[in-house]
Amino acid sequence: MLQNDGLLDRCRQMVDPNMVFLQDIALVYKSRLAKNFMNDKNVELRDWPAYSPDLNVIENMWEIPAPKVYVGARECQMVLELKNTILLVWETLDQPVMANLYASLPKRIFDCAHL
Image (tube, rainbow, N blue to C red; front, side, top):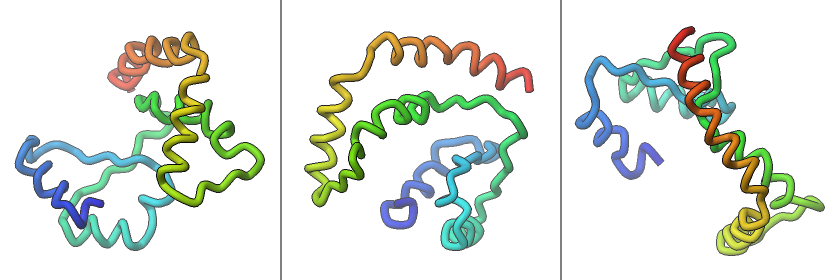
């Protein structure tokens, strides 16, 4: 994605040159291909601090519907099928649970600021 659409170059034009880039700790970002790309683009990567709070509530939110999307080892054959399945599952989610995740953001930010 970064390689194809010039997103990285556009980001560099908009942000402070002293800004630090932290990326998700998912394994896909630790691949040789990803590391080589970042190295070729002179992107300085920093490790996440140990036991750092998670500021991305979307990850927590996705943990709730994901099992329903893939129930029974379902495999969507087309992107549209996956999109429709996700939308149907999303409509059934417990809104108070989602609201609680969103409400947890101030504490997450506070915890991060006080590392």
